[in-house]
Image 1: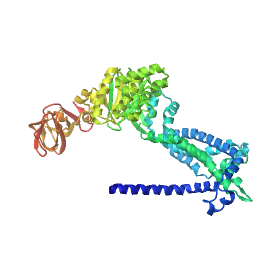
Image 2 (image 1 turned 60 degrees about the vertical axis):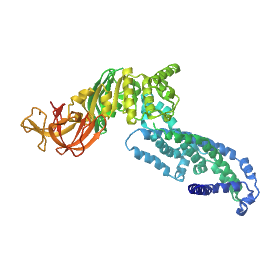
Image 3 (image 1 turned 180 degrees about the horizontal axis):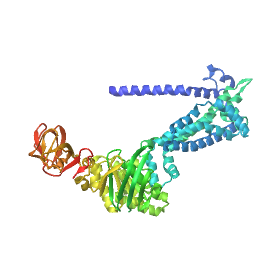
Image 4 (image 1 turned 135 degrees about the vertical axis):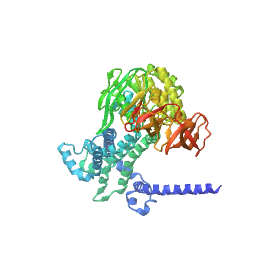
Length: 277
Length: 350
């Protein structure tokens, strides 16, 4: 083995160890949650027994046995419709920002982004009053409206970048080939920004899936989502750590599955980016 | 096939006027090249013909029909873009047939028209490939194929060869020209390369700063330029232009050297510009003294850069010249045409 080969192996090992350490740091909270979810109620509050105590699925049985199923349905429905609405409205707005020139365009783009600066807590009371006025409290529709309003600035900002990266000549070629503006968007722009849309969709899904403030304040029984279910495990008799952790693990799984499912579109996006118009 | 008529076309971007009342008539089946330096407005004019840019004033007519307010799809024209603009998510066949798909052409007819265009351009084996799997020249051919399939009234080309290497550019130049001869469709072609313009055009339109400087056949512009700009833009290397004055029936350079060329009919003491093409200069023969700065032999000819009265002066000789850098030579203006331009307006003095 030559000296260069030896150095190369050391560098490779060092890189591997570094990646493993960084991954561990990020995964540690999740691992803790997983371990707690697999322990009995007594063992879950004893950190010294967290690695050695016997495993049990009781927490999962209890968590699933409650109302968690309906919370999941609510979360899935709200995330799905929020993502769809955000992508459709946000992408069309992003197209406008990317392709049309008008006065103070950049100021307006920044104004839209600035909506993201607003903390949810600052608007939740006005939202509550408005929802009450329109008789929308404790409905999925209300959550979809709130989440879409909060997701759209981010969607516009992300999609604008992806659309601007497309050479304008591609659209002009489509116009020459006989397309209208809408046909051009559907047949040329959309397929080419699909990878970017996928990435944006993942963020939208994660944002709505994890949202807590609106869900907690604007729903009570019928439209409660998974993140609010942690409140069920807080009571005057104490915190049910095991069930809370089991719910947390179950809550992560759908987003994880979604990200894995759409990963291939993101990879396709990388190859598209490498192609010259 | 169709005529294209551009009448007093003006284009403004905000307060900035980039086209100042341009008028050009293009006959049926004519190959017209719009040429000029960067920023002269040639691509803007092409885009206005295409319908991709709004016309501020004036009219553009295709086949006798004013198309100012028609969208590109209703103008019956096709365009080949500088960066090809092939749809990366479609195969070559899909790219070529896209316009037919949009028009709702039956599948059988689509296939036969794509096959016919592929045959003309030698794209048969590439029909199932994606643009990323093609070389620059092949992409260029697909872009042309996409235009041919539509069978438009007018072909527009926007600097289609500028992304290709020198060798491929020469080959594609010949290909486009032979394609035009075969299809005999009206072509409007934009380039900043005057060699491309000279070799391909039936008619050249020289543009500068949004104005037409001269319109004419390639050799007409070369032999009979109307001003200094056209004289120096057409021809490679560019025409040499020297300041001179008329004294006692002779042309005298600022340093006092006398040119061996007959001056125009101007009063004694009049100042003017004298133009001489590099290939019309002869070595020796009692001409103006000069000193050789650089010799560039290309095999078929010798290009000599000389210092003539303190100015750079380029000569091209068909023979292999026995001169070296630093040699003192005399350059004769007696052979070939000598051009004279007004010192202020730079218009040709005939």
